[in-house]
Length: 268
Image (cartoon, rainbow, N blue to C red):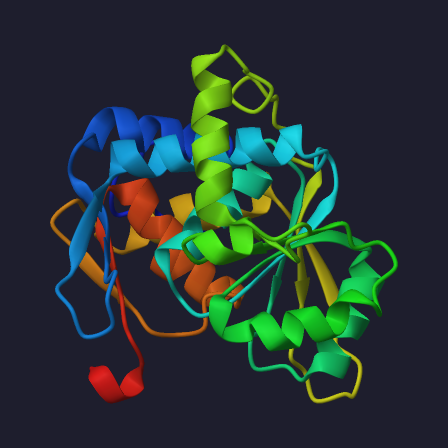
């Protein structure tokens, strides 16, 4: 039996085209609501700003030598996670989302299996990630999702970068005419996301996903469930899972909705 779409949806070839269309269509509308201070007010981030941040981070990552490499993203649901994801898959390399609740030994196993060269991580996981560093031979870069620490910046050899330093570097590179990221051509059939399942066996399975896989899901779900720019999504489920990543993050970006990040189940 053939499924008949209930609603018209904008066709998208890949996630890069999706973001470009959404930024052009929804512009200064809020794409995300984030809290800079725990318990503080929500601060809106527009579609235009989101695209600018994605382009800046992607440009900086390529400048760091991350083109075509596997980049792990690990942390709670937050704006910087969403920037990192599209900055990786839209022209830099292969995203490897990981469960922030995993113990160090399991994180190390996943990093080694995926041959990860860069980790973008939440500051809450700093100790875990630093404990992994010596056990992953392929690892070259650590990037924290927090603001830069002036005292650490003065150290001779900092153990990790701040994502905000890279955003600044990326903006400067873009202003100088660097188009390595923005002109990157997407192969919609190639593996761009490498997921590790949380099954019942002791060894998780690696699942390979492409832009085509994700975009087909986005168009299919949006053709059956009405979602538009008046909707606000509260992101609660773990964002490293493909269900939340697709339905609670990428779909709102695709449809012009707003994503609000929850501080935790206790705060709902």
